[in-house]
Structure formats: structure tokens, C-alpha cells
Image (cartoon, rainbow, N blue to C red; front, side, top):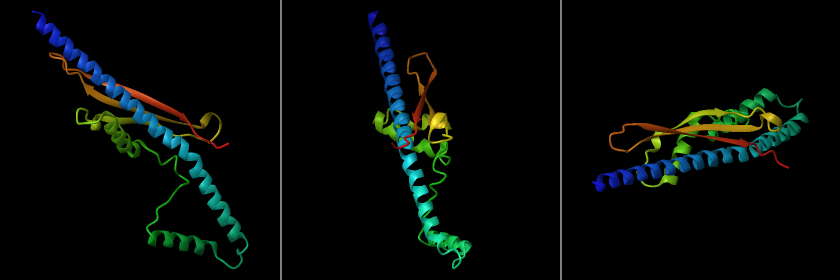
Length: 173
């Protein structure tokens, strides 16, 4: 008589442990990804601004001798020939849920280890882009969710774990 209750307790305990592991892995995956975005946004913007300033300084002296449209098309052709596709100016706005989902799924799979969890059940619900590098709009937010099946006998339910990571952009010193 005691054995069925003991087995049910063990199954329930393993389900709670599975949910806890998935919850911790989801939190770490989302927060680490958001941290990388927040720390690399300012250097990317700084590099873009520096390159634009250098080009403007170099080209301003030879404005009469050089057609700027010709120089821009020459630069574009050179980058296409060398297979360089860099658009740092839209770095923050180019971050989308479709772009982040495989990254966070890989991090989630690394965190949980093994094949006990299916990383394809993880989805990115929303990505909120910052509006500036300072002030109230200097935050990146990622909302993610993970669907996990409850493995308790006679219970056919699914739990959705949701995590949100909210990071302030690093804006230098």
C-alpha cells in the first residue's frame, strides 16, 4: 500500500527538479544573451561614429576633386567584391526574436546538458529595442518562454516558464 504513494512522490519530486533545471537554464540563457547585447551596443556605435568622422574628415578636403556618389558606389562595389556585409549603424534595430532564438536555444541546450530537454520548445516572445544610449530609453528587454510537459501519471498538462531579461546599455565612462 505504501509503495504506490512512494513511487508517486518520487515521480513528483523528479518533475519538480526538471522544472527547476529548465527554469534556471532559461534564466541564464536569456540574461547572458541580453548582457552581451547591452555591452556590445556602445562599442559598435562608437566604431560607426569614428569611421564616419574619419571618412568625412578625409573626404571634406578633396570635395572638389572627387564625386562623393562615385566614392560611395566604389566603396559599395569593393565591399560586395570582398564579400563584406557590415551594417553597424542598425545594430540595435536589427536584433529580432528570429535572430536571437537560435542563440538562446544553443545556450539553453548547453546549460541543461544531455537530451532530457528539448530546446525547440523555447521561444522568444518579444524583444524591446533601446531608443537611445542614455536616459530612460537605454534598455534592452528580451522575453522568452519554455514549454515543459508535466510527467506525472494521469496528468497531461504543460507548464510554460517565462523569463524576462532587462539590461541597461553600457554607455562608456
